[in-house]
Length: 218
Image (cartoon, rainbow, N blue to C red; front, side, top):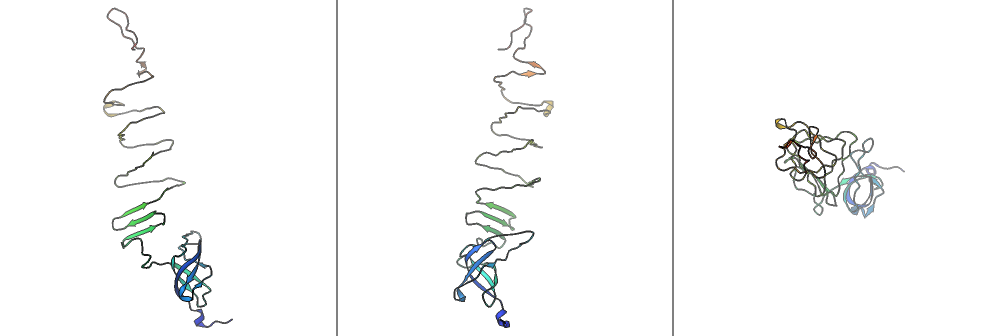
């Protein structure tokens, strides 16, 4: 069957997604007597070595490039309308807002990247992970913060505002004024002994004034 030039001209049409799957969609076109297209590919940023996928939703308003016969074409992408406005009115803001309430936003005017609304977040790397800040870094959790590593190094001062508990022993060296540890207040040892330069405190005795020795400290 031969086609004339007018039959081969593609036109842009607007419709809604009737059925969808990753990378493809069937579109309902009201201005073409309610035509329902075949499965049409959806334009995506990359599809070969690097691949992207963002499946359209049923009912989503889209633009379609369709041939004159309505048999072949491509979905150009989703379009906003007065009934379905963009999630932001700020021209300097990039935003992705998900139906479950999660939101990724970058405001180039305030230079702020924000990710909110997720139930869980996972960052996993096969190599090193580096986080650098020109100012402060704040970690805040309603539950626990766990650091699971063979060794953890702090290169600066560490301030613990509440109780410090350790279960694997305590060792240290150095310190201001030549002292390895400076403690202000009382020190209590329970269920053990205090050893200073190889000498234990509990069995330690001193000569008394009568030529004998004092008993062990009780």
